[in-house]
Amino acid sequence: MTLDAVLSRIDDTLPEATDRLMDLLRIASISTDPAYNGDCAQAAAWLVQELKSLGFSASARPTPGHPMVVGRHAGEGRHILFYGHYDVQPVDPIELWERDPFDPVIQQGPKGPLIRARGASDDKGQLMTFLEACRAWKDVHGELPGNLTIFFEGEEESGSPSLIPFLQENREELSADLALICDTGLFSDHIPAIVTMLRGLAKVEFTIRAASKDLHSGMFGGVAINPIRVLTRILGGLHDDQGRVQVPDFYDDVAELPDAVAAQWQALGFDHASFLGGVDLTTPAGEVDRTPLEQIWSRPTAEINGIWGGYTGAGFKTVLPSQASAKVSFRLVSGQDPDKILPAFKAWIEAQLPPDCELIWSEPEGSPASTMSITDPAFDAARAALSDEWERPAAFVGCGGSIPIAGYFKEYLGMDAMLIGFGRDDDQIHSPNEKYDLESFHKGIRSWARILDRLSQQ
Image (cartoon, rainbow, N blue to C red; front, side, top):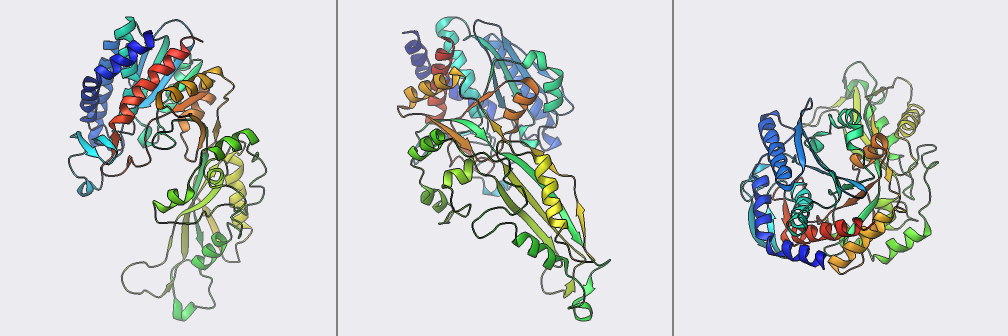
């Protein structure tokens, strides 16, 4: 069979594919630091050359920030867009790295060989799995698989400031029948997954201010209101004893998880004790009537991410602070609107302010949740392909985090996205000593070849 020939080609050329990934990993494409602007441009240029070598028409497109890389191959069948990002997180604290973060090395890990470098898993190793599948396919077939657009971003790790304008300006060129996003992971070490729902995010920083200046606690204590006391009292009531958020109307637009999806998640056998035990915790702290997977994937949250006020240095400064501040974020699920949740939260705080206190509200930020329609036959085709490669049934799963690009594709380009990735929970992305298991890289390439084979038959 032709697919067998492609898979054999992937197996035979894995050392060369690994070398190409190592070359990309050597480029310090840190998007948040202007000192690395040249490196980001170099990474974009490197990818353009790789795409051209595969037969794509490709270019690096300038933006106010870092370049976007776009490649195109007009072929038969459904138009598929593949997305990844070539920028990486900063490496601080550098002293915790075992070696230079941009001097990649293959090491022997507890689960087999791994590649150690910044960006190995997030997202250079992941995006290269797709390119290497295309390379093997072309080596065997003499042409690329189907009707493809490649889109690589250079600002994902720095908030994607150029992304929405770029999507709007290039809507016609980038619009496709379906987007593939490779920036997620396996459900567990050997169970592949397709993410079909992502939580949204709403966040705000605010301050409660009282007196015009800090006050002596001996002279004013007992008679003057303390903003820290007000802030902690309000935030202490953000959840009830059952773990439910107490902001009025918070759950109005939250739908119940479909029974079929709930049954599939239950069948995954998620071990919450092991999951929490990995960070020295024992007990799920969300809504008590929801399973741990529901708490992570399909239920909204409210979290206090930071709180400060008064004197926090060495020793004591016995003052009543004039103000106290906090950062609060909400993970939202499908149906919830950040523009509804944040004003409701603000009104809830204001209703609890005592006399002499005022609320100073920063500019809030928010993005809605994304839910993919798995009625598209491509989802079942991809699921079958992943199950064949990993020899375990692939799962449709949720993701507790937020990957805004999936929602942007829907909002600005009118297409659903299928999120498939091969990272693992212990890859240490965003942390020192990031790694990517060589098995994940190898089987990721083979998985994309199988998926492309099935999609080409639709």
